[in-house]
Length: 312
Image (tube, rainbow, N blue to C red):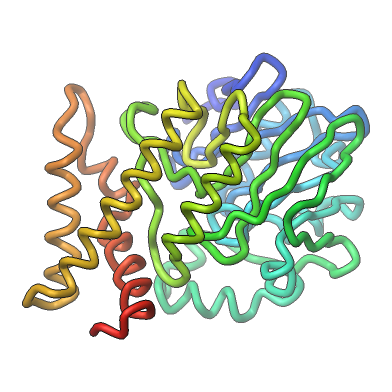
């Protein structure tokens, strides 16, 4: 069993984050927790099924949930926001920041839950746990362009769609850290490679590239990525992400002109990405491929191109 101590990592000396060991997998979801001088703040929550690990990590940091005053949500996908309603129930003082497109789905999660159920079926409870509503008066809806003051810390907010239409990113001026959710993709092979996260339903490549430009304009010292951690070079990482996103987009567009079923096209795309990645020594390729969701990535980009061009 992973202990609280082993779950604690550091993006910077004063910026711990908790590996919530999602479904027993280390290095999948990280939740930053930091002192604002007026309570603690978290960026995202992870899903409710991982709350025991989150509480364990908080305890190792010497924090209780009652001391957490603020949650900054990057977006409302269940791996990022699934536990927020449960945390709000457990801590009546908790306030939640989220993009205005996501706010209604926190107040009434019915449609979001139904949408996810169409994908995950009867596995919902075992994969995610519960998804409770957040009282409307505890939510601050964001447009992008705001500056949020949380205690002694100031966070600049940008609307960063592309992965999701309800995605925002936060820049902590004190530490120079940009909390980018899924906008900067995910890290594979112990942080050695960046990959886009492109599942359905609302991938938009043009918007995504613009979002990466917005993050670059902050000139962050570091990026924090929910999946998982901090790349060595923020500037290089975003360059690689931009190039990879455009490359994947073109591969999927070209695949729509070839014969075959969608299942066959998705399989061929996944295999082509595996070939591109190679087989780094000492890496469990299958685990990383499953983590990356390569076949789902094809479907998200195919939906984008079909909406854009009318192709079937």
